[in-house]
Image 1 (cartoon, helix red, strand yellow):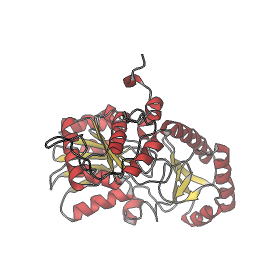
Image 2 (cartoon, rainbow, N blue to C red; image 1 turned 90 degrees about the horizontal axis):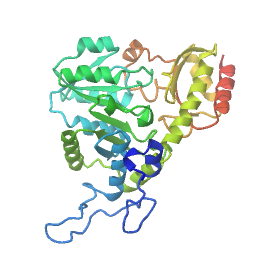
Image 3 (tube, one colour; image 1 turned 90 degrees about the vertical axis):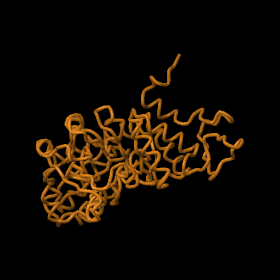
Image 4 (cartoon, rainbow, N blue to C red; image 1 turned 30 degrees about the horizontal axis):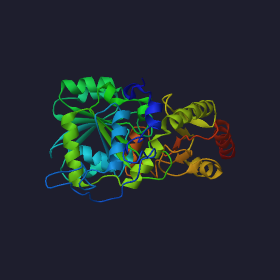
Length: 368
């Protein structure tokens, strides 16, 4: 007999929400828009009282998110940044954190704001050797992206987690770029995983969402309390959109990765490119043109790639971190670790790889 616990990820994803509504047998998870729910009797509850605390559509989604990351508790939030904020509510004022240096600009902006208010302290590390030298028991948590945004540096989660445990630090991993299809941080020793679910998990540029997953009962209870308290939950319709997006996650990620590997090879062999940043997996690629002055011309010549912020959708996008995603990071700081003004970031979609390569080729030829 088929055992749900033994299903592969593609099967788990395709079956999200099926048979969740026993009363009607709905195959497609219904959207429960009700704000409030009737109590059968005084002192009794159906498990749903008020939608901020629990919602049937969101419950289906959160269960799927937890299962996908091999966690026990999943939470759907109103954005990727609200997911990060939810996690940091776990820590007392005055806590210190060690953070991977190459970081999404929005995360840096939030951390900088917290530090300026005197809430927390943040110190950054560039390499694992740097991390080894800095890690100590004074840090409450370690926050990492891997691969990093936008220089695609890989951080060894297992090694980071092992040292963190020795010093009593929680490990938080932003898994937005690789998704649980490619990387499962909880299996590697992380305590908490976050996602900007707007990106690959949703996959269609049609919703704003975040996700937090843990395999700790204690952390799960604290996160649930905080989310119910601050109210930054994902609305039912957006939960339904995210469920729909998740059903094709494996198909999309596999095709995007295949395309990205072909695109990365093309860029690495093209003499117009100064440097390519690609870890060999996933579908995010960054590269440097020879000069910053070429950026505007190159962007104007692209016909298939869309010049826009965000990533992870079915459409291929090109982003200029200097003025878009990482504009909040001071120029001198960005350039000190390699995020220079001649760098572009690609999010590879599900189009035909030949068309993607041809678009880049013709734009480079007209730029050089």
